[in-house]
View 1 (tube, rainbow, N blue to C red):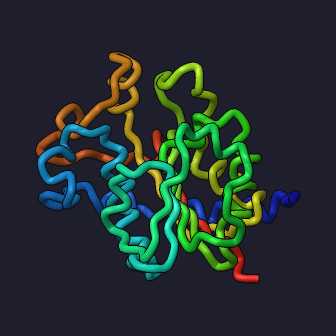
View 2 (cartoon, rainbow, N blue to C red; view 1 turned 120 degrees about the vertical axis):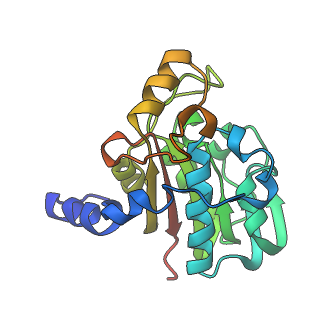
Length: 228
């Protein structure tokens, strides 16, 4: 699939570019923002907090909290705590298996795979396989670093900007529903200064953590396979 410059600009303006209000909506985090992380969320890599808060909003907005068949690549993903599906299929790990055709075609109502694309040497092929497995009208959610310190090497290959993530899904045939992003300069300097992932305690000032639009470090997407 090819896109003109005009189409790319429209995709950016309508699907990727965020209003100023987006970058301040979680400036003051809600108390105990994530049920299963009540005692541990402050110790996790901070971008995952924004990802989960967006995910919680989006699955409610698109009525995805319940359904028939959910597929995930990690049974411990905290996103799953917001979902209640009749059947949950945990696909084989490691994520390199997404390079192979998945066992069910046009089957999954919702496919969740997080922090995965950077560990795929051929993300286009993997996303083609995901597309085939999701039923028409079904949804996909994933998150990925824009850039990151090396991890799970040698199986660490790439990163995606918010626009790059949108174009990856569009070229695979998906429709883009939502794109999110988080990052700030403090996180970048601490991440590469210590080569360890940074938590809320490493970043907050007066209980606030800024999201700077020009310093995206993580991005995430909710996409849909067209109904027909």
